[in-house]
Image (tube, rainbow, N blue to C red):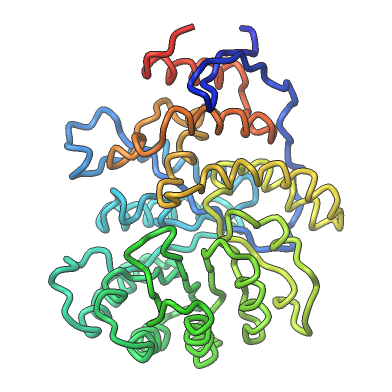
Length: 395
C-alpha cells in the first residue's frame, strides 16, 4: 500500500498527503523514571451492545483493560475513571466503579504499577443537591467504594459543589472533611472550565489567583493527606506559581496538555525538589504513550535534549486535540487509539465520536505523522480512508 492519501484541506478541497515514513520511537526497557507519570486512560465502547448510546453506556472490558496493560508495560501509571474515560460525558458511576475494580485487578499482575482512581459526586442528581452536606455525602459514598477496593483517590472537582457553594469557606469545609477521612494521601484535581463549563468559579471565585490561595490553604491544612494536586488550567505560569508554593513533599501533577514538556522538564527553582518540576497526570499520554515513555526514560538518564527531541513534536498534536471546545478532546484520544490498532472501531461511549469535524481529524492525522506517532502506517492510512469514505470522500 502506498503511504499516501488525499486529505481535506482548510480550504475545503482535497490534496495529496504522503507520510513521512519515520519509525515511531521505541522506549528502552527497564528504565526507572524520575517523575511520577500517570496517563488518564480512555474507555473502549462496545459497539455491538443493544443500547441507546446517548442514554446508556456499554464498555468493551477486554479491550479497555488491555489498553491499561499497555500503559503499564510502558512504565506509565493509570489515572482511572477520569474525564479522559468520559466521566461525566457518557460514563456513569456504576460503570466507573467497575472500571476501577478491573483496573486495580489488572495492576496486581504488574510489579510497581500505579493506579489512582477518580472520586467525585457524579452519581448525584444535581437538581436534588441542595447543600454542601449533600456534596459531602456524595463524595463519601464514592470514597468508601473506591477505598474498599484498595484504591488511591483522585478527588475530582464536583459540579454539584460548584453549583451549591456560596463561598471559599464551603470548599474548605468539604475538602477538610474528605481529606481528614482519607486512608492514604490523595491527589486533588482542579479542572478548569475550559474542560468543563459547569466548574466555572471553582474554589469559590472566578479569580484564579484567589482560587489558588483557597486550594493551597486546604492543602496546607492537610499536607500529610495530599500526595499532590493536578491542575488543568492550560496556563503554565499559573501552574509554576502554584508549584512553588506547595508544602514540602506535595507534588504538582501537570494537567497542562499545552505545555507539558517544559513543565515536566522543570526549571530547578526552589529549595524543595517538588518546586522545580512537575510530575504528570495527563490525558494526552494516552495518545502518545510510547513517546511519553521514551522521553521520560531519557530525562531519567539526564538526557534533557533527547527528552525534548522526543516530546516536543507531540505538543502541536496535543494542542490540536485539546483545542476549544476542550471538553471534546476525548474524541481525538480515541481516534488515535483506533488509528494505531488498539481498538477495532471508532465508536465512543455517549456517541462522542461525533464531536469533531472531518477537518479536525485530517489535521490530527497529519500532526500524528509529524510527531512519529503512527505505529502501523498502513493500518492508519486504511482507517483514515474508511473515515473519509464514511463522510463521502472517496479516492
